[in-house]
Image (cartoon, rainbow, N blue to C red; front, side):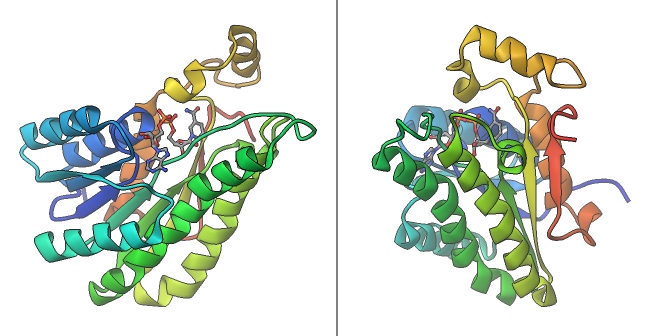
Length: 249
Ligand code: NAD
């Protein structure tokens, strides 16, 4: 059996740039129709939609703040009404607001937990009924190695990313009997706008701590997502796949 996503309808949150963009394009490369959501960058989102259509696949770019459950339900309902079903959700939207605990503000804590963790509850909950009706589905949640190892200066981010792992395993246990799988991809240090903001010295330190000795690319995270989206992973649920060059082993 070769890996194909033909006939599958996928949703990627925060798909206008970085890892989300790479995931959306790669899902389309393997034959899926792909909806992306974005928070602000309409132009970048339209560009991703056009690229997916150039590959001969259907696409939509929907404005949706991932923190809203009501909007998540609208997005999922729109996909199901227009395209008949939703097979795969990739919960990718995420932010960082780093600070040491002594200096961290309540707002920094709340923003990161809400954007990174509640968003995953929102879309996973919204998709549950349509996926049950469709007799199956795959939820892929983007966590981080920081959620496994912790990181000084990122307690809010690490807590949100560790929370994603606990949520995903619980969701998998609740919905496996309906053939809905839920898995986590935990990237290490990947070159995107998010990591571009880090200090050069910090980046060199991260590379030195990575057994494969280099930063990862968004495409390499997308490869793991494609596998989890496909029927090649049909007996895998509740799993955490690190894409981190060995950083957290
Ligand atoms: P990025 O900042 O380039 O992209 C994040 C995306 O999420 C953007 O498209 C942004 O618009 C979207 N987003 C943020 N808040 C949103 C909201 N409220 N509603 C809708 N969309 C929202 O970052 P990235 O590096 O591509 O990160 C993607 C995911 O991968 C994040 O969850 C991040 O935590 C995770 N991750 C990244 C790395 C890395 O090294 N880059 C490592 C581990 C995990």
